[in-house]
Image 1 (cartoon, rainbow, N blue to C red):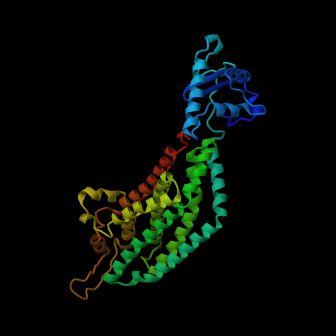
Image 2: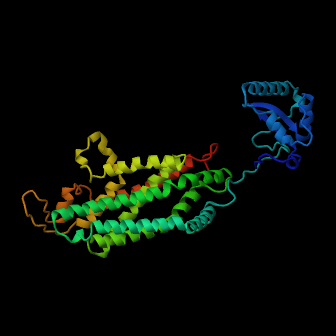
Image 3: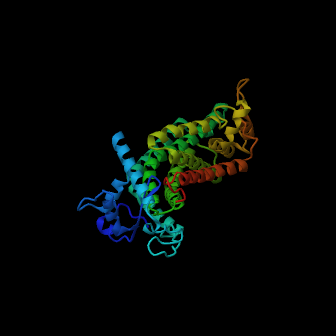
Length: 399
């Protein structure tokens, strides 16, 4: 048990007292005899003054000025020398790691936390759900953002999926790319401006051993998942039918899952960045670096074959690359288009496979892209958890 700055009544309950400063032993013995010991050294505790506070002031280095620092260091050195010079009978033996300082009893190994991991997870999930329900302004902003952007994008690319021409096929590829980018940034900025501030509170609670970081992180992820799924569904319904993408319930739900996995991957990056950022401003400056890199190496803006070999490996970590490939394969794979060629040099694909080949999306099959995107969505969350674990309280990263 740790007692921070005990008041006088608590201090009087101490049997033994051990004082250490600058790595040296200042006093070890009965707590009731400590005032007399320091009084004999010419250091008298004022009347009506908490002895615990007096010892802290007496044995701490004073950095307010060079003279005070020199004086306090000299006092600490003299007290250390004085205690070291005491004969052995005057210095009781220090307790071992398995003994109590007062009674010499073996310490019992106590659990780090008062509740089990699953009990922590349950309580923290309930707390996170209540917090989400109280965030009416934030939820309203997310709803407005989903509606406005989905309607706006739907109007810009209205019914492009029904137009069988080279330009409309390219327009569909463009809207699929932009839809994924929009949801990625939406998921990212929803975290980086809130999570760093919340992390400061979490660090304080973890220092008090209220809960394990794993119970907190996974409960937070679980409590926010329903809201993410709901707004992703709203966004998917509006954009899918306004753009008039490929008909069929299977294709729609595949599109919805792709949107969700892409957004969860972006959120994983946001959590990783926020775990290391000191404040939301720093997180906001770092996150776009990873997002833009994922966009550049997705294969839509720049052909992957034209990227130098020594940089091309970055594309394997671009979640937008796999999301875009999945969305395109879901839209065009095994589909007859029959786009008429009105002029030489026009892009007039006859089948969906011609479109996929045009964008270089035939090398990796659908299931492989799906597994890669799923792995990134899960892996980035795990990486964020490890980052939070390593960025724990300064003196104990195990909690």
